[in-house]
Length: 315
Image 1 (cartoon, rainbow, N blue to C red):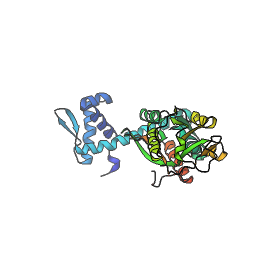
Image 2 (image 1 turned 90 degrees about the horizontal axis):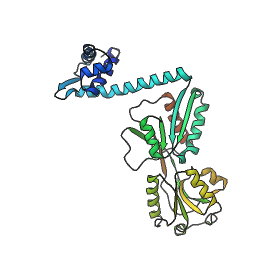
Image 3 (image 1 turned 30 degrees about the vertical axis):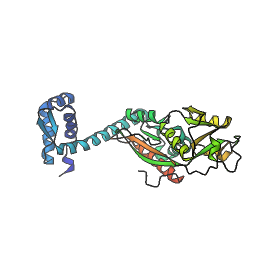
Image 4 (image 1 turned 45 degrees about the vertical axis):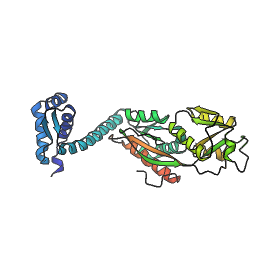
């Protein structure tokens, strides 16, 4: 079988027939005659040597061979649409664009260094990178709608929408963190029972993180804290740690600079916390742009360079 004889137009016409379940409706949608559309599909069937559609009481339906072709035709269509979008964008602006979404806990130590590396890469110097910082649910919605190209966020305990696909990218150690002036900050050893009388800080939106917090408390032998403050801003939580006698369970990479500067401190508690994983998500079936691929590769390289990549290869 000669690959170059396969009709691209015929493959795209097959997608129209699948959508409308009618040759006539598909022809009207394509603004072409019904005989012309039928011929394009028949030519494809002759070249492949198999029937692609069959008529039934509920219209025109793909055969098993047709289902196989349609699966690959959707990928081809997505790649072509991505190609046209990228070319049109370069024609209009002379640049490519990349829209990145990330949770606040991963922006400073992974996303920003990767963006800086991407900007300094000569192959990517003509890329406009937009960064949206938000909570996981909004990021996932943006990815599904198409307003984001890639998101970096913790995996959800709940089923991820079938429209997206994710892979593990990086991970961060977790610990109990307080401000340098906190009464527990100067202690060489802290018993878990001492934690319960202080104010706890939690991300307001992160139901997955809060469920994990409950499990960590149980592992520490503690009950639900009597006093807890929830905020949708990681920056606000950090400032509360600096200003008040409060504590939080946070990814250590997020507060690493503050710990090294001595303004925050990780409490020495004899408890091994599970690491927080961060995944890269893209929309399933949507072709990745050259800018998205370059950024993804930069993320992987930077995570490996920091020694923060998961044990298994992320992509």
